[in-house]
Length: 567
Ligand SMILES: [Zn+2]
Image 1 (spheres, rainbow, N blue to C red):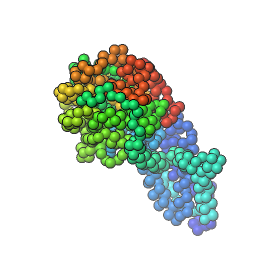
Image 2 (image 1 turned 180 degrees about the vertical axis):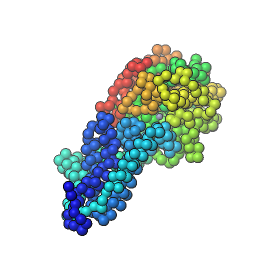
Image 3 (image 1 turned 180 degrees about the horizontal axis):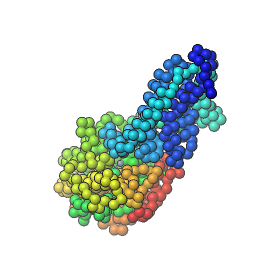
Image 4 (image 1 turned 120 degrees about the vertical axis):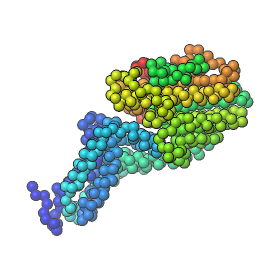
């Protein structure tokens, strides 16, 4: 049926208008349609994508003379963003979210590049090409738009009312929400449509960044621990806390894995106190370490804002503190980790050579570690933050650590490519073994009064059973491999002579590392108001608590991890 009449007429071309709408909707809709088909999510996102896509009709209706050119310009922007959300769907079968963006921006550029390289699979190219071809075909079909002025303006007003005015009115007037909450709700409504996912995600991220700068300021104002007592007061000591990365203890021979992934630690096993049931709460670096290094836990995620951190505690106890990291460049971005690092006296940021980009080995930390050990300060507290076995695994170890190359010990269901990644992870674990053992040997050589604790921030599922089909981490689909972390204590003979280090009956306690600050305080002889022996892994008064996982900011996702399920 003829829906338009010839150029110059006073009538509107509804068919063309719909073609324009379809073109704009396509960029958000493609992922939402796939999400609906795969039954991944509820319909709300789809509905919002349908509604929000109306927005782009406004400019083309108001300036119909350049409607095709404007559609091309808008389409180009939407296309770029849709590539990201579609690509993300291809990998995870899920919707792109702000937390993904947070993870990407939190990492340094080299890490982000690896993140993308790690998840890239060949068939995404044809998928994205077809997607682009469909977009182009939809654009080619667009005719110059004819709308009457009256329709253009009344439609514009109607769209603005529907998209912005009504939702704000409803929140502010009907629901009596605050302006902040109303804006937040509006942003949530916009998020399902491109480019708002990323734009709003980025705005939120920038807001967080400013918050982090404020964090440091705020941290400086937190009152110190009251009644801090130090059983080792005045005694020279070197206390080392090694924060590992993405190392799943189930892949360490030290913990019974059948491949020889930790020969150097195996060789000094009798010097180690090996804890066998420690888990992380969150499978993400920042979220996990925020709890590890503060009083925050799954039920009280914000205590890091009001109570001293582990770094504050050690400074208060009179230790000179150091932060050596191979994890993040000093890009002057005050992210959470930078905030933590700045709570120590001296920082060493070892991963700042942009030219070297992704290939960085943890041996980077040896030189500053030697330097700090040689520092004449009598009481030292050193945090070493490793890149550990973070993806991309093959970039984590030098060629001489490429030990596992064949299929022996690899689950037989894995494809050739999967087996390669499986081997690379084991090689990375083996190099990590070398790094930890080297740090211990440096401490041993120093022959002082010293203590070292090593654990990983979280695990990583690298085709671990059952299923053998998961690579990486995903809080929405938790597996034991993402949460099972190594946890060990090494102490020098001098330290052992002065402290009870048998840990009888303690080594297999189920323990959530969110409460680590109590364990650390206990180990190094600190006591204060608020210290809770029930949360200390090494205290006779320890009590077993549920090992809570999930996102504490979405309390309905909080649940206990059953560590016995897959072991
Ligand atoms: Zn991590």
